Image (cartoon, rainbow, N blue to C red; front, side):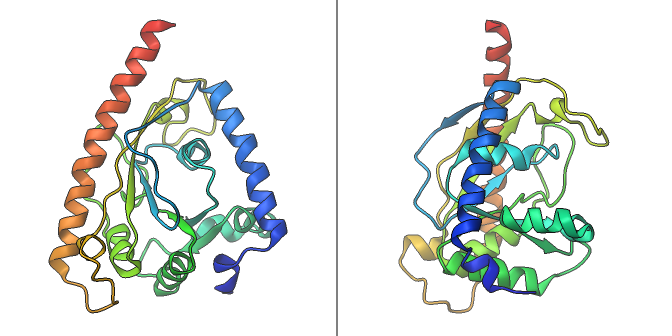
Length: 232
């Protein structure tokens, strides 16, 4: 696995990503009338974007949140098809084994952040059902602490109606996205980012804070989606 690919994309890869992002952004706006509300400006890269996850289209919706080039953790099965695998890599994706601890993927993610690239992590680990956000994986918090970067929490409402779990068809639906204030690890706020040994309590604290924020943002996004429906 070539780690440098994720740290230093070529000019062609950057332009390819930018072109794809604009196409996706236009699709999201026209087909799903996607709205995005920012409670605070997104910080300058690098950062970790941490959206809720209810549908396969959530990855596409990232294109409406930021125009910053993003790096993605993608499940290893996506790379089974060589042609599709090349496309995913062009869009910033790299494989991760969800069945166990993939140290290589973690090292790639950390290297990308340290090199100034931002990262998308769905902290729920996989698509979930229902309104409640709970039992988050700790990878986002671990990487934020390790690399000394903030986490930007994102609540998405409506994507589960646009493409439910198990569906192979994409339906028209209203989608609202709520982007919360960045969560800065304690080590970043205090300036102690020397790369020393991390405390388990700090990972747990940041994960709990992220859980609360995602629940709050998801509820606000749902309320905005209902408001949108009432105005149509």
